[in-house]
Image (cartoon, rainbow, N blue to C red):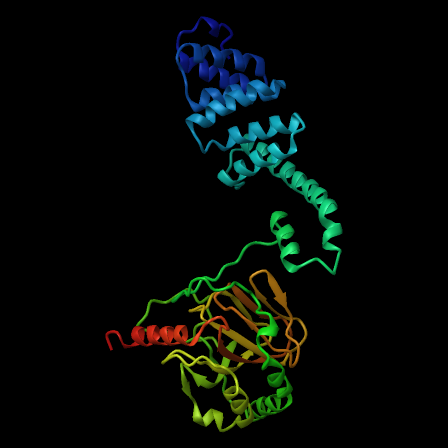
Length: 389
């Protein structure tokens, strides 16, 4: 390294010498050289970054803050400068500020295998410290609010949800229909049962519905792939499910039309379905079916087409080690315990058992929609299907 750089009038040479001094663990010399470059007119993110790093290494945290701020002013996405500020705040016993700057740095530049080793070491330290700080904050917050959450007479699901979101224990999921979005509807992953008084009557018919399903299985009835390809539409990412009978269906209604030959084999199930407020919307709805998920199969996360409906499940044959997630909530199916969910919120299913899983699936209107709104939705869907026909 040049030892007499104080006589140089080349700011780029001074900067190069400052970088060399920093890498040689000579932070005092690095600061001196970099500041000389600044005095000669050099003013960019690199020179201020060197001053920030060297000052941090010297324990001069105020200078490190000032220099890191100057580096960020030149390059707003200078992740290493954010690490310097995180380190400085950490050393100054300011955990909230340290966590904020570490989080920003790791968001701008996530760890990856190709990262230069000296930089990777700094980001690994930032990641470890951030995790420790988040754990400490979680413990602090929990100790403050847990008495309120433990009060079962007053605690609501929203209260627990707010704490979980703040602590990163859950994420927000919103309806993301792939086709039509009806605005201003409440967001429920699984809908409250008290809005559907007819659920108990349906559940009371579980045994006769299960008998009809078992009859289909005993006769070797075909369950066709639930998802089929349409050569008139671009192929969506179906995660390999299109044409895959791991997820199979035996329809009683399909795309709004009854399947008489299938309904004749399942008269009690058809009668039970006719008693529900099914969605009848042109050539789209309802779809009512026995759904089979083969042993060992999974249905990857996906979203439904339109958020005006709810999908109902009546569990019928449920092996162990099966599950179903909608948004943040995961449930295990239980024989005869029906539920309704918004399928435009990301959802997935799995069967990790050695037996097939069967549920009865149906579609009903969301209870918030009035008749005029239902008519409009039906007209919209019909218009889509009739266009260009």
